[in-house]
Length: 323
Image (tube, rainbow, N blue to C red):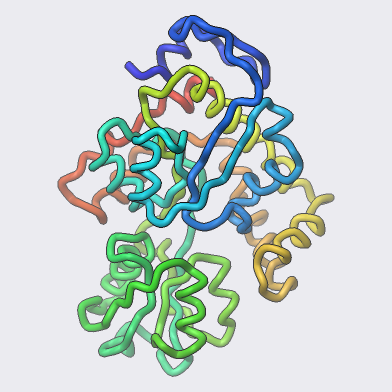
């Protein structure tokens, strides 16, 4: 049994208050430090709740000292959590599967997004996957969500991913620049960055083969202070969805996005409306970061058919926070 579930049994959570965990036998102080690893930045439309909660001081009000730590790869982030230099990682699904499978003690403890789409965009002369034969496709690491969903998308469209050269370029900004410089003929871009290349052909998106998700990766045997910090972190982040969904805040949200993502503000307004119309944040709020095992089975299958996805999940933190 993890500390998550032990403390849940002994102590109901009172959000943003000083509480005692019988397991630790001590009072937990405010100003709890949380070092959370991210591969890129939280200043993206899909991760607005974290950025706004940081900038508006909501985490601080809840007694948290949240530090966003940029890491190189998901594996780097996982090793940092396992070694104790980070309390948690926000990582994409495929990297999380590999990390939770290979690093003892790490589990996926919360499903942070409803589903992130990665788009396969191409030079305007390329219209279908058949036109990708012999072409270069800019992507992330070989085991990244970009590459795995991109290849699955090509197969689903009737193509053979091995007929193209998948060029591992790194993060999204590098992929975009390489595509704009015509160093590659096509690219896998996470939305809304596909809007940066409005003249490109959109071959398809990852939602056609499997939705991809961002998750919180943490140790299941964490100490009581970190446990309380992670609970508060989830509660504050979830509450921030109310700010984003409120129609009165639409202009402020889009104005903030325009500072983070250098694309046409009118395009960002369309992105905002698409999120709202699809009930994106409403669904996150309703699900309260619950991990859906059936979704993760599909994700894990793409990574490694031999992995039992249930072994990678520990939902006791989510339950201790919201139930």
